[in-house]
Amino acid sequence: MSEAKARGRSFRRGAIVVLGLFALGGAVLWGLFMAPRATSPPAPAAAGWGVPTRPIRVASFNVLHLQRGFDAVVNEVRAVNPDIVLLQEVDSRDVVGLARALGMQQYHHPNAYERSGNLDGPKATWGNVIFSKHPLFDAGPIPNPGSGSFAVWATSVVDGQKFVVANVHLSATWNASPAHEEQSREYRAKEIANLKAAWRERGSPPIVVAGDFNQIPFGNNYAAMTEHLNDALAGLGNNDMTFRADVLNTRIDYILLSPEWRATGGGVVESRASDHRLIWADVVSATASSATGPATTQTR
Image (cartoon, rainbow, N blue to C red; front, side, top):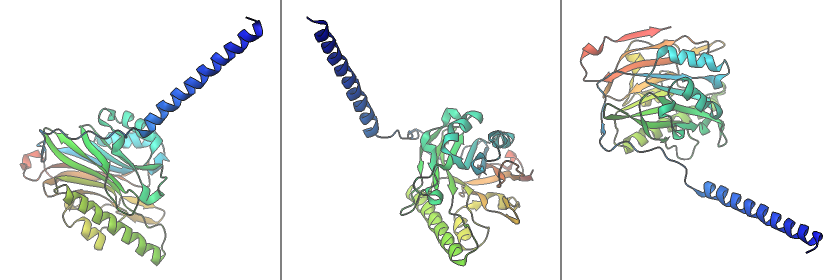
């Protein structure tokens, strides 16, 4: 066989190998694309709906995309030492790093993060996340028919008792135009209604709802928020402002509890890490003995 023919045959073999590798790679990628996305595992069948006997500390914080520093946010959350933390305005690239920095990566699942389509459109790159020191199950978006996602929720299991934790970021009012104010108020009304409807469809289990509601503490929307859920910090006599921007200083962040819970303590943390303040509450069973501790409120 001539040297030229040998080179030609070798070239053809190489081309076939390369084409085969491309085909294999394409098949693998297509398989990954067509495969169903991983879902958050369901809660153990042995767990029943209820409130654990131990106190649970819940914190909520709109972190302003970490614009004032990753470490600043982490340090403020760590200082409160929550069992469950609900963060809003978290960019997708920061989720895993925050879970690790807060020591809550063990129970983090991708479905416990949901982009804020209601605020940033269908291509949103930031949203809401739930981190916890306790196992989380059934994580996913709260249904919002006809509009973008505004919230994520999950089932937490503590001491064999399961309850729902929901993290919300409702539609915002961006300017003082009367038409815009009315429209944003209507959007929030629909989101609150969809949250309540989804909760009822699950049988109205024990729930803790927290986040940035973009809603001042009066009016029809606040009444709807607190129709079946209790405003934890207001119940403690703490109506401190949670958001500050220029001359605007108002309360728009809340922790809401279903009747199975009561708050024994809570507060609003003065923050340099965001334009919002971190809020927190210690919550226990509504039927628990007062020996769990007196109701306390704190602003730092």
